[in-house]
Length: 283
Length: 255
Image (tube, rainbow over all chains, first blue to last red; front, side, top):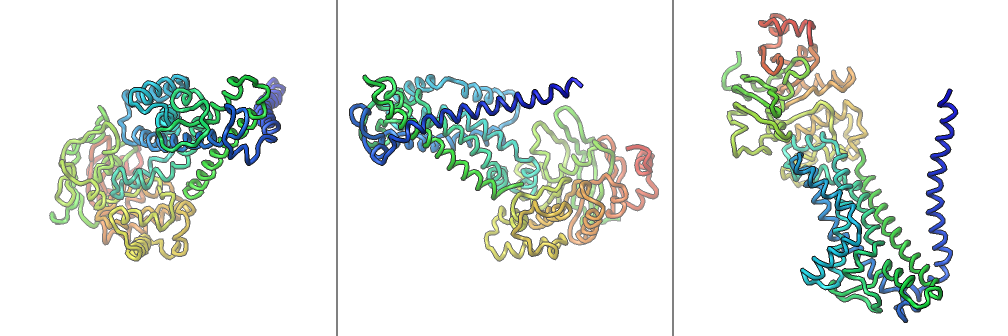
């Protein structure tokens, strides 16, 4: 009797909570699109900033963020997947391996500004890369590595042991088994986790603040040792560092819209790629 | 009696440990070539563990240890420097739960040959056809080679796994309860297949099903609590067992 009264209440309560999350997200996106869209023009997207960004376009920041994201993926994806394969397939399961896992999970919880300081100390100063794309990508890679490792390991663990045994029993070596009969099936799961990491790399400000981002640099980078502008940092500058923040409000919204579109675009690309892989290998 | 030269697998004082737990107690066994040997016994008696020592599949479990000798074709397979890859090519395995790879039917059968260096497409096609034929599957699925193996029926999947094992041309085929997850009709087909394969392969099969052991095997070994209790011609084991434990088990008094 009791549960029959409570049951619909729980049902509706949970539904309300879920919907309210969607409402919050919808509000943010609609607000940004509403106020940002009027600013978007070919000149805005392909032009160089003038007067510290108060006028002109944001091309260098778009290119900067794209370069940082691609560079970070190039570093973090192979490293993260290799670590996950080692932990899941090769490492002897025990206290030591679990300690490594704990360390990785802890790393995922470290505040991004600490990664920024770490990158400043190690890559910018100690290795002497200076404030550069290289230092920025390495720092961002360190930050998203734990996400990639943890989710990739989950994806590997989801592959039934019987597939590994079946391959080994045919005389395949361990690596042949992993390469031909484990990795292809776990790829979609590994990419799902990596998508989350990619989104974070594109949106973070603190790690790049200290390692690569330029306050105002109206030109495109020539090498990996150049500094670049980046969308999140540019947004921060537009919002807080210019003398008349209200006057550049449209520029802020335009930049925010481009940043969000970029992150969603990268995610969309990854999701489509993932679905293709998934369709090819289903079981 | 079996002539001595026909012994293909010989174990001497074989002990096996999962960590501190001893799973096999001094197994001495001589398994003849081109016959079907059935391993029977209650759950946990060590018959599957014994089977998996013969192609070193237990190696992949952390914390296991082996003592004694296993000779396959006269060679000690646990000697240092033994190539596990060529051992497993010689000693194929079919698992309890059919484990087709989530690839096409063709790619499943071609998996082994590809790994061992067969690249030529027409060679592969020949091997795939021959292996499926030997597994009695060719006529059923010759038009479905490009489909996913996951779309086959359970019985077909298991025969595909047999075909996959045959594709690397083993001498010995280990079968770990190959029909226990199948319906009676599919089980009968697997048993018929074993009957056909016995002419060309040495088959060692673990089974829970006593009737199955009686139907398909030439020799039967009864395992109990990690020891080999009795080993001899199937007919004699089932009609005149020498040990009381064996008699109790096959007459259904325990297990």
